[in-house]
Image (cartoon, rainbow, N blue to C red; front, side):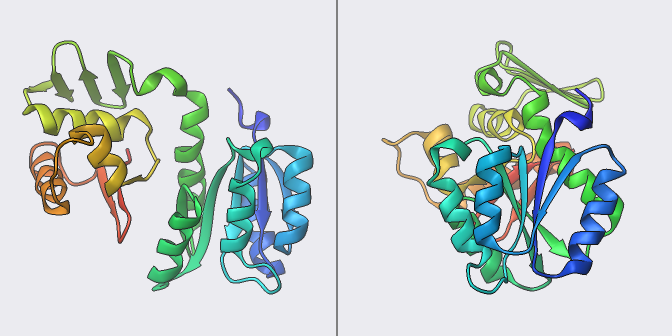
Length: 230
């Protein structure tokens, strides 16, 4: 599906940031809408039903965190993807953003190519068969093939027979590239409600996956969880 199908709402009180984001995303063919405050952004979002909202955290009147919560409480906007803009080192903002319901965050300043890459990573959730992907028998992403029936992972043609929990953890993360899975969600999906394990268990499984597949596929989101990128 072409980029012209996708609507992106940019929300920032700094005109230079809005201009930078708009220019670089319009070049890629996206439909771009802008707002300089949270309240107007909510009105615009209700009208246009954007696919993605790129939302600054630090804004006067209604900040990005409050705006995100309002969006997540709006049934009409339940499928919109939200990524925050945060300054470097604002770990607290990133954690608060995920707690409010954000899907990702972008750290300022950001290079144009990185911006477009991050947006495309989010949009893959629309381009792929999202409803069935978590239950799909085979997930194919770039050079990785995850075959749930055979319990086999192939990376660039090389086969890996992973232990059951490592396999299920990888399949979960890869089912929705770019989506951040919290530790709580991972524990529930992979280990279930009846099994008591700690965060250290997840960390060990992630480390083992990285040792086998490489470090570039699974990204740690500090204080929140993990996501799959390629």
